[in-house]
Image (cartoon, rainbow, N blue to C red; front, side, top):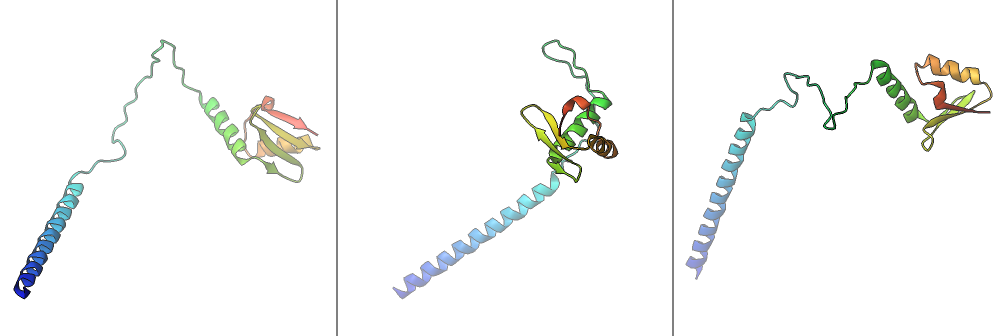
Length: 128
């Protein structure tokens, strides 16, 4: 019985060794394949294509002024609520307007201009 046990242990050891070798060789081959395939995540050439609507409507690109206005509006909205010594600015998501609480309206408009926000006056509700 002792000889049978030795044979089983030797066979089991050989199987584990063969299995380990096969796994390691397969891993090396998969690494080589990954190195062979190099795809750039960014295109090397950019093709400009005119976008046409499927409904037949004309697509009009926004102007640079409209893009700046949207950026300015979103930037101020994301920073709200803003509290200073002279005023408080908050955004009303229901009405899509900025609510400014101040006793000194001029200081708010100066701050808005100094910080480069180009948002129309209609988008503000001034409360005293």
